[in-house]
Image (cartoon, rainbow, N blue to C red; front, side):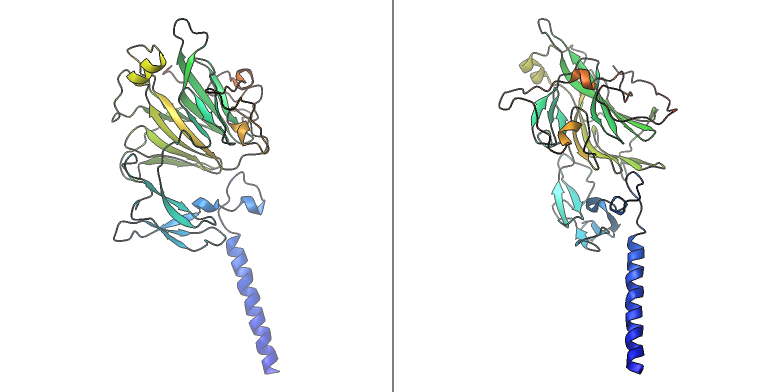
Length: 353
């Protein structure tokens, strides 16, 4: 009889432990669009970790908090890249923590890779989510939807020039507006007469207000809205940032000029008082829908087949009529999906161009 009671008590204790563990796992911070779907309430495994004390060697440590094989594992940055946010990003790689099934800490550059998936660089050249490279010229002074989805729209403002004898503009991306919920984040390049790598030519605005990104300490600006957290962190002393909009997108952005040799080689015929500072960017979309739209966005659709001609020097992607918007801040275009909440007030345009 005593033995039977003992077995019952042990079984009861095991059930309590299981219920408690299940309860704790279900109390994580909600992410994404607020859905009650359990899979959407779990933090993305890659970035679900917290800081531990740094080793005497200067190597930073992190404890993974995500479910799965990496749960509760401690990851230590390699000696080659001891910090997650190195100050000299051009010379020193950053430590990249991955708490997914890979469960690893590796060294990576925190700058846009112009040949990588989701990149937008040069005049302007895209690499889609399908890995196919294409060009989209747009128009000087025009604004176009790069991405338009249920919860996110990213527009690009094009600057450009048309030398005598050409039938179309040379164009580059000067600014992005990142629209989500009731907010708009703008990342732009200033107009610059003479380029200096050490002078910051980056503009950041949050809901039309100018934002200062510090260069010391964490070298970042962040804001916690009701819906999601937004972070803009420097990845170099000047002209390079990583933008994170929680649950929606990460963007590595760098401001760069058109150099004299590049101007000569391509016969851009730029004016002497403007280096046409523009943005080189790489996007990582965190939760796109299957119906995502936009010049770049549609290349992330399941089963998407690119219509551009392969093997030619400049495969062109059309669609200017489908993706042109009335302004940098407008979510309206023929193919756009994103909609502002009713009663949303428009904000002022950029005055740099």
